[in-house]
Image (cartoon, protein in one colour):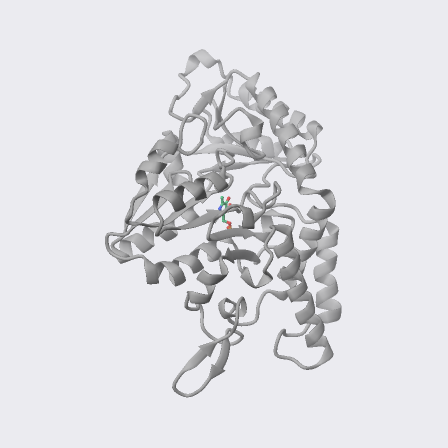
Length: 409
Ligand SMILES: Cc1ncc(COP(=O)(O)O)c(C=O)c1O
């Protein structure tokens, strides 16, 4: 990349794909391509078996016993929209309360904001503390008898915070018995062992492309009794049981929510990604990322001008480090690193409410995955040293911005 070996540190945005994933999809396209579920011929049966096999693999991967609770969608965003349209529109009305955190990704923020605007519901936004963790006192206080839905991230895509989702779900169910809990697992499932059945939430979403799989395939898990009671999100083929001139009835789970021809190759690719991660062991994936994160935090901490957001404890964060280099714009940081072949992200990270809360416009972000190495972290640190030199920074030239969740090094 730009004459240097690529150092890919933009994994929170999307991951690279292993050969096994590409080959599984290629094999499907070349040898088993047919439409699923409605064919009697052998090729269609093969395609259907591969799609449903992928669903079973995904269910096992996240500790879900009943694969009918795994709905294939396009991405995490679509999964959240499905819950909002199908469950939300039916159950959340004027004066009802939706509780969420200020650190949500736009996909888990705008959806609820718009539902609240449409239905006259109240949006209650819980802050995070100096370590980037949900302010528990504020969280508990926000929960009332009127709370209908509570949602939070499992791992923050900016602060890296790993939420204790089991504990949070328990608090919600005790304090707000009428509320459902929706967990955004987009940054958790790719990076650590996740057992949805043990969390105690009602809906959990994640996305294939961040976990070695292809784009265009994501997952909604929902508690069976909720999914059974919810009306379809989209109408058309595949999702019906019987259609007559005057009325229609719906297919069983999960196909009731999968209108039209699904992303068959995408699901098969996700199944192969799950096989790959399972062979590595998710405990090992987490350990590797924690080691890299700890090392990167330590090295970054030696550079006076770097401001890191969120906890400095790698146990409490995923492999995501958002930071700024003094007053330098994050896009300039990313451009200088790019000239060294190092890919990081810069901007608002689809978390503008959090940026506003932190009092910043943007941040740079390095995020790690299975294929990153300590040597690559060293190159990244050398890149940051170059930023400091290019901008001739002396930490006395500016004051480090301090907000609730900034930890200046
Ligand atoms: C925490 C979080 N939630 C949701 C999403 C949305 O994922 P997708 O764009 O695949 O729907 C992302 C993607 O960056 C994310 O980081």
